[in-house]
Length: 292
Ligand SMILES: NC(=O)c1ccc[n+]([C@@H]2O[C@H](COP(=O)([O-])OP(=O)(O)OC[C@H]3O[C@@H](n4cnc5c(N)ncnc54)[C@H](O)[C@@H]3O)[C@@H](O)[C@H]2O)c1
Image (tube, rainbow, N blue to C red):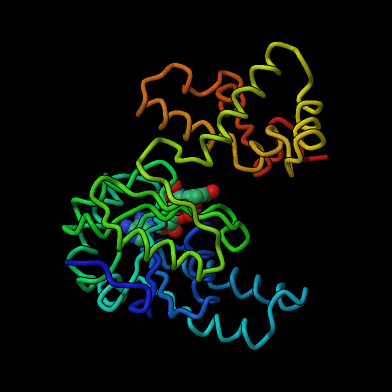
């Protein structure tokens, strides 16, 4: 088997219609591709469909998209629970299902059987390198990570991460597809926990937490410094609250499980907040209080 080139790609299949999958599907449809978004949960598909229609309406009102383009893009987007039918003529797959290895392995095993031989199979996972699902697909050379950032309709970065057996053709086609999606992809030459973006973010967070717990500066002042001295759009504590402290803790735990390095363990201050149900913006309280 060998990976199809960019010209072969007509139908993009996105698996999972949650926070990431729904917006990735919209990105692909806005770029002119026929898109199927597949999920096992009918209610998630309905919610995704409604949210995307609302989002497109808002973009039209703001003048970001023309009404014709939005309508055409929504017309290219199909929502389904039927993986067999959606995979049968998929040229490129982006898996964005729940972050669990057993679920992803099962999906890649099915895709290996169902998708055309030229189809490239990618995963949007933030913590699982694609080598963990590549063998199950029976076509490891055509598998890599294609890691979008939240919200996928807005964020420009896509990390394309190759594993040891990913072919050059797979990497090139995936990078080019991301460009056609209007993104600025970066290539990561080998699997490493956190890839590049989350490692950079993790390093800044670690230092911010150390400065704060040593009483060097308040969290407000640390956030202000990141913004006014370094030009970051938000400070590390504000960013943690936006991402969700439970997600931050999960990423640290997954990294620690891979590296065994004590420095990668979740910071006790994060674990404390999570134990109190203070998960950030989504619960109204994290480092900051959003209830006021
Ligand atoms: N949320 C983020 O900020 C973010 C950022 C980058 C990457 N990611 C990655 O994207 C993936 C999805 O994350 P999310 O935040 O969108 O999750 P989510 O919980 O919002 O959505 C996951 C969806 O997958 C569906 N699903 C579960 N099992 C399935 C199966 N077997 N087949 C089809 N669909 C299935 C669920 O019904 C749900 O709708 C994860 O791998 C995560 O690591 C998340």
